[in-house]
Image (cartoon, rainbow, N blue to C red; front, side, top):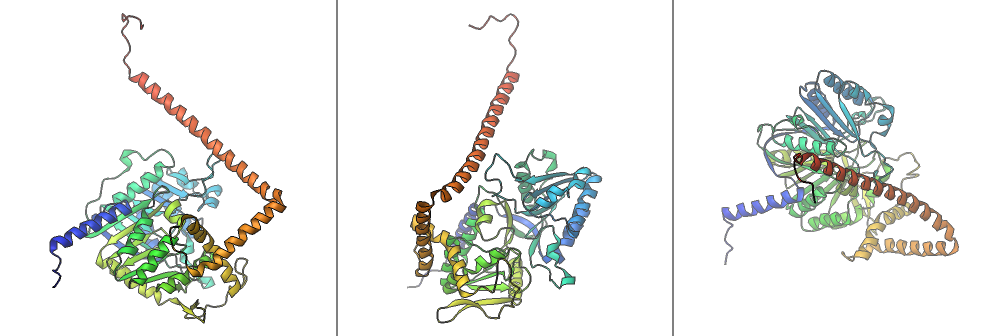
Length: 504
């Protein structure tokens, strides 16, 4: 008995279900009629940004994690000030933590002096104990409501490298967007702007651009109270049938996503992960390496970029779906930050990004399992680096094991508490570390109670004070709101006539 071939109606039904799943996971609809241009590295992105800003006639909106006081940052700042002086509406929202030096040194004051508006996202606040946790990690530029730029690059000369010191430019990917999807980018900026103060006026939001191409895409703007990209990343890992190729700058994935990648590889999907060999945040690269073994054992292929820094955040699945943006595969990006990414459903663009990924692998070193007790090793040896404070040597076996255990403690301990996943035999060492840690903590508490009580008391005092201040501010805000509502009701009520009888 032969199985009948699916009918066109069945294919259409499945396509609609898939589109519904993607829309609900991403929190964003599929927008048609766009022109999307991939931009690689600073050589493509920086000139495109500068040209668009210099030609702005209506508005320039920028939401940026790092806006550095270096050569390229100064150039863009001066362009923004020049546009503001001729009447272009300029609004710059920068992250306080990413730009704290520029913030306190007054680097952005020329923009404000020229008539532009500048705001810092989430500066430290006494009344908010968690103000430093959530960051605005977006890299978004919208010009005149007709063109937008999204990607992993910040406004900083770091991406240009240093030819005098023989440091190559950073590897990164961005997108130039034109068409109706620019409206979604505009609304994403407006939401972030409103989260820091007065919202943009209605006349500051240009109309939706007309269709300019044939690309279908979603603009996914995540906030600390959403997990759109986490859900979408898991969905893609589940839907991929042939290939899933990922590049990530700060890979520290959750156990749930690690499991999704392992299951995809075990199911025959060609899963590949490209991460930096050397990173601008060295300890993250070290922790990322502790996650290689379970991925390699499941069949995931892992590569390290041979250049100074691979900063791109991209994904390509089956040569027909792709994602480019600011979201890294880690907890901060998924759950704490404001991020913005574009998911593309177009075989031409996805195929081009897949070809670029394969080209990047030519400048990378594959990590494989080797030895009697298989350990991740490089196909090509890594050049010996000078010792540093965070990496005193080339990570000998004992240090690598210790770092690996430390990185897995949180996940392993959470698994024991929740009982929601099977514990691998390879995690025995991590559980031994957990047990010994609590035994040591018990002994320390029994023998030296003040040594434990003092930091706990200090932490409780600081946290309690911050939370109390937050509560007072909330009470004041509620009282102001009630007074405003009462005043509005009084103003709206008609005045009683002069001959009206007195109220009983």
